[in-house]
Image 1 (tube, one colour):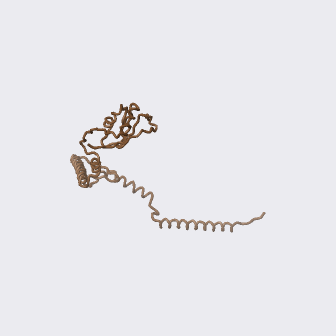
Image 2: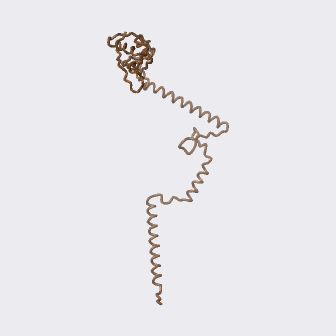
Image 3: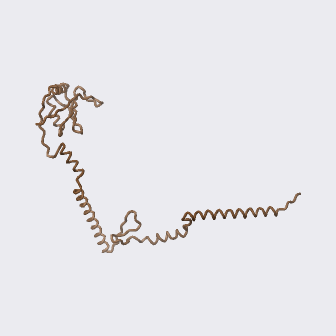
Length: 226
């Protein structure tokens, strides 16, 4: 027999519309103490309308059918009356052992992880072999297997042979024609700099020629006053 102390106090209503004169807050619940055990324990004080255990399983809320049930619970607590209740023995580990087992399940260890990874790798290799066998059977029947892999421009089978290169010559011809139409001029920085220098020299030469022509025209002009 294990003695467990429960702590009770009036439930302070915080907008939940529960009656203050019949609501009881209970703390310190033992492990595996559910609503059924709560009703069995506190129903000796009077009829209970509702009982709910918090999700953390350590506190609960009880609403009695009358204020006399609430007062009887207070009197039993003041008299330190012992209430006996027998709980069913669980089949699975609980309490500290249950928490340890739950923690171990999250971190199974390197050996178990290695077994899981090996099983996944074997399943992956088996699937790849099955795909390769199906592709070989299709090619033996005269079919061409075409596969597409993201990030690659050329498709190939498991043997590394390109199997979808039909559109490659047309694409290469199109690229060559585009390169001829637009040669790659000024690819390097020094080429761009030389190009700008040459353009500037050409503008200066044209400006000098224009300036010389204007001077010649002014010199050839005859002043004829009326």
